[in-house]
Length: 80
Image (tube, rainbow, N blue to C red; front, side, top):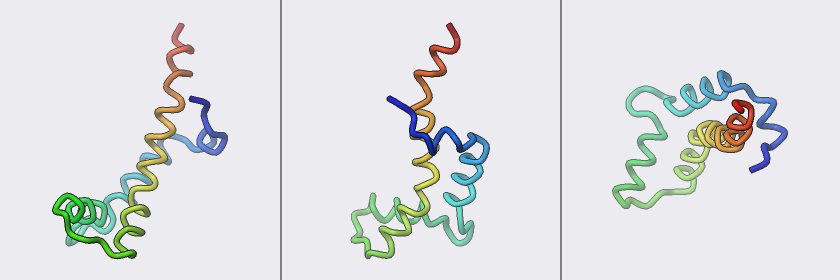
């Protein structure tokens, strides 16, 4: 998979920090990402704002996973 140019400009420490900070915000009473995923698993209907909230809080984690998956083949070739 060819890496996206924008992902190559983002560093892993920055993406990890964003994923943790946005993914766990707010800490009290329950992180939004955890709350929305729990609602989905329980089969409760989500409103439009809930879907936006889920996507917003999961976006940095998705970027981190996408960067890791797209750079993985390059890392294997570099070890040879």
